[in-house]
Length: 423
View 1 (cartoon, helix red, strand yellow):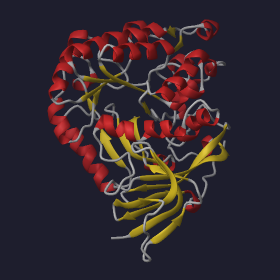
View 2 (view 1 turned 90 degrees about the vertical axis):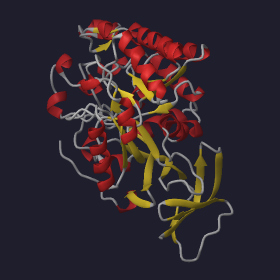
View 3 (view 1 turned 135 degrees about the vertical axis):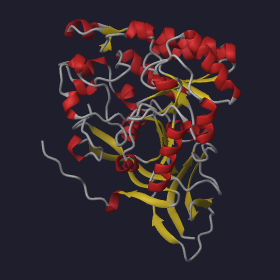
View 4 (view 1 turned 30 degrees about the vertical axis):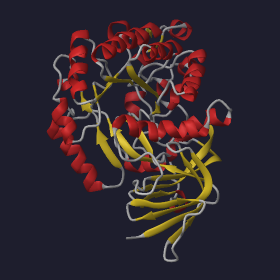
């Protein structure tokens, strides 16, 4: 087995609350020892972390594509792939195919979410038990909610037999139909159909009641509003087993980002008001929002450079997830340990995954990052296959220096030549 010692590191582990300067020893695919007094064998290869943060590798609960290089550069060691692929992941054979491909590549861990309903059509419940046995970690219809209340109830009842996590997109479809942006002043000024906050609140309140009725675990993907967060809080207070996520673009942008018909800021659900953005940061800080996800959704420039209402939803997020979220840390609105918990221990707990913490015997999935390193987002220097980011030229702080999966380095910033692009 190969021994590697990461020395002079700021060890941060949200699960245990550890935050200390010390070393971490990796023996093959596992963590062997860590701490201020960790013994380092003479034959171990040494990596000097120079006081930077060494944490569990990030677990991304919501990604629409697997882009290995971009994920590794963002500190992501586990990707949870959404079922809306060319071949929809709605049967055990599709789950097994994704798992076998990931195992053959072995660069980044990939786990699929299975479809909640067959064909993502919202009418007939998919075979959750079989997909879970094959390796699916949760079940969702991804970009649209399960609209029929009776189907949703049966889905939650069925999932509760396996203690499976159901993930619902919180947007009542009849209220959102035809909408492109947040319903408000910007939508009126641009002449675009809006999506009201009520669409989010109504979906959360309906499904939270069904979760309480069935006792099932229910997770809301991409909560985007203050009122949506309040609905989640009320559901928890009533005893529902409800959790939720947010993506970095909702923490950094508001509805003004689409001014001038900027399609790179067209996301679903839409960017909301400034008061909603601030509330989301506060919700992540106080734990109402359990996990931070990338919602990485690469789209071609051709599909983005269209009239606004025809342009595709989605942004690139793997490489910008950490620095965008660190903006709230640097501003004093979010504790670094809480941010790391939302990226590591919390998703591992929700999905039943073995990683997400630093401890002897745990998988050696690690990220080394400098939370203060300044750089500027350059869409022509991204490792993703497309360039659809609304953050081009934005100055940020915080950069991944090294990513380790199963004990092996899959990204090393010092050994990586920056990509050069042309306009």
